[in-house]
Image (cartoon, rainbow, N blue to C red):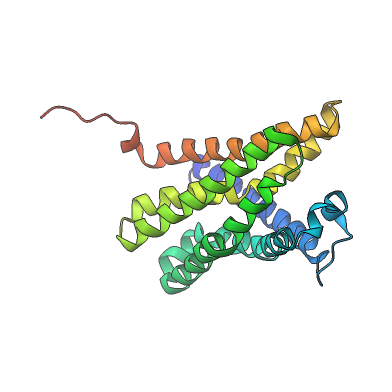
Length: 220
């Protein structure tokens, strides 16, 4: 095996292992709210909002479905599953897309309106929710039309935004230990950087894997 391929394989394994660890940690966070509890963790800061029934529905729907979205989305990019177990790949894909379009995405949009951090953070989370729904819907339409390349591009964008749940907590931890900022100021930075960073990485990867996106057509 060539050295470059070996390094690439090791990098992918480390990335996958790291992501699985974060998925496990997110599961632990979700389990705090089972059964329906509004006196723990994040909800301690939302004592006014949680009194509203529509916020309760949105919050618990989002918390209980988002972990499954991250979990099933993770396996969509596993080449062995895509190539060797196509029916399972298809099943996981429909679960991922259905959960976002029907539950996790709409509930996230509702929660965005009540986000901490004022208008700046709210605008970020609203835009994130809209793009998450849009990219996922485009991925669904593309696979229905059997446009596999376009489907993969939009799935990459969709999952990049799905992983904002991971990067938000990671960036928050990093900034808390490096910058001396008021909590709300730091949260505003994290609110934007957590998903924009992911989307930039996804776009770089897409343009490298699908170079036709950056190649201008030549005259015949």
